[in-house]
Length: 111
Length: 115
Image 1 (cartoon, one colour):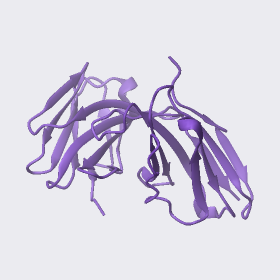
Image 2 (spheres, chains in turn green, yellow):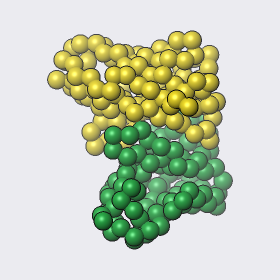
Image 3 (tube, each protein chain N blue to C red):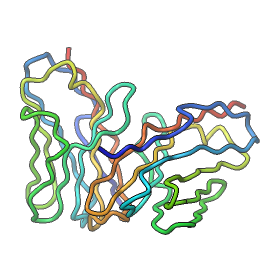
Image 4 (tube, rainbow over the protein chains, first blue to last red):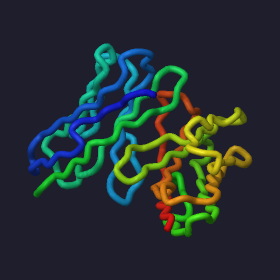
């Protein structure tokens, strides 16, 4: 069983503030790390797929970094807005294996 | 273009009944996945179809669960003799070729409630 942990489970952010949270995964047999955003009553939406150690991806105010050697990825939200409120999921894929999702970080941006 | 669609969006059933959940993937996507999210839990993999290959059923929680994918397109997840612990949101996703770095596109889910 692959252990994919996300922390914190939830966080409240004041509008305009920046925040970040973590996804931890096994450091061996790495193939890819996915990030998704899941807003209430909507489908999970793909944010990033990361495959290389040291990868940094950016989409608007959201960015992510990847460290495959130590088994973690950070997701950053700069200047949080209410529309950023969602659950952010990471998913790890080992070679020859299926995606294993973390439990998610629920972000609530307060106006 | 059209995304992944699922039906029904909500299903309430009585314990012991059979249910069928449907997924229409994005046209041209060869890979199709079923997941579920139970209350307070993360997304749990159920089954994976890739082209004409035998499906990966390793995530199915019991033999009451089965899934088919007809003609490489529409998929049906069937739960027989439903139990209250089957209550969850069932999500379907599809991807172009089913590789690990392939983006999965999710449907809106079916919320199943077993009374």
